[in-house]
Image 1: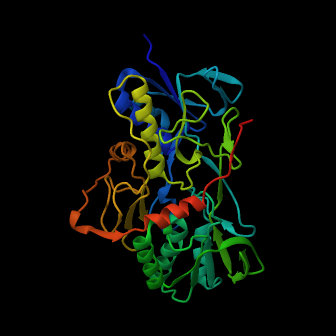
Image 2: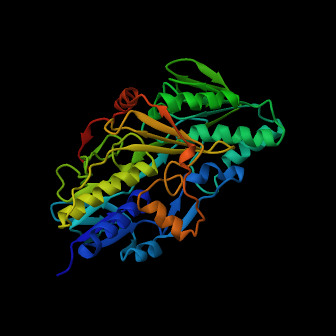
Image 3: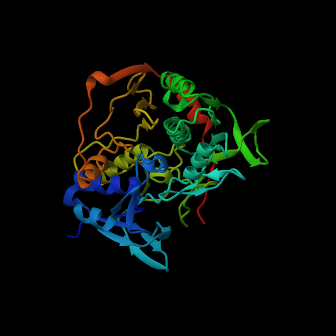
Length: 408
């Protein structure tokens, strides 16, 4: 008998984590197919350091990764789902059948601040490099780094000015004015009070001003207009993009294209359809969380096909590796409130392997593929700090998406 077919739509972190986890947990009980519009998996977390020569965007061949998991890869994008027939509609009006469907097709980035330089986080994006060059030459004296709010991952808006400051100091430039403008009420508030205070101290030591509780509106004539009111002078503004979910016909989504799921990743009203990663309506977009969501999906599907296990729901644990231009900082915080009231802030690794994305299956899989030489974390380097989970949950609630509307 042919095993049930699990069709995964997407070629990013959640898609790959689901593929690897399914093979590890369900083994030969399922047949896995991966559909993505491009032939390579782009590992983007170190794009923030690429303009400073401190990292690079890595690429992996999806067909090769799939083959190592005894899965089939097809380079084709999906446009819709007919769940009542268990069919995915592919570009070109082709159809493919599934028994279980995992939607992990991610988001699209949209420039959100008129007049600002968008940071796309892609290889070859030379905008930041140009701004740093202008700072070094004295053509530019002040730069604002900002994020429009909404669903996002906040680390890059902190990493870019920290890396810029380090690069400028190495070049002997001391008078640049660097500012962060963020809708957050405190720096990296989602990680909790202890981590936030530590980051605030780090910014002060590196002479980086931070303006909290403020959203950027537009930048023109050397002035960044902000909400709720006021303006901030700057020579250049670097802005993170806004994110929208990739809409598929037949899949319910909210006004921004994000898909609501239950704690096991099931899409309501669509039988045997799951979603994970940046596509879902969880307000924090990050590879480590996407991997955790994919693990919950893989365990549920494995249980559905007869594997003897108790599928664990998605219980988010934030893990962030903050690049500073000096030693990186590792931050971890539990958002569920069910596993203690502490987070960890450390100069040493808090997870293994210690990459930017802490995926249970994907991280060691890619480390092996990259022939990376890794050293285990030093327990002596772990420093516990307090985390205010109540404030964290309030921050998450404030970021809640709008109501679900039907796919079209």
